[in-house]
Image 1: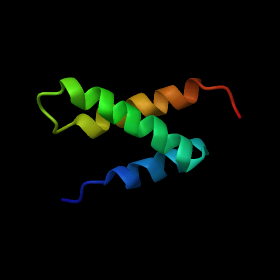
Image 2 (image 1 turned 90 degrees about the vertical axis):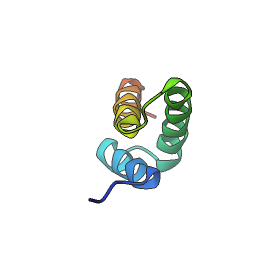
Image 3 (image 1 turned 45 degrees about the horizontal axis):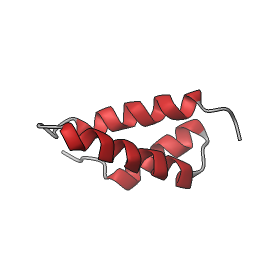
Length: 63
């Protein structure tokens, strides 16, 4: 079973939202840091990060 790396997730989000990868990377790493601080189980952590990043970037006004 293949799991996506953080960079793969960042690229997928950037493509889906047509957002600059640097911006997605910054928001993604920030969300990962925030969520992993209190996480006891990390199995689904990346899915929660992707969901949070996608929602945050969709709420942002276009550049």
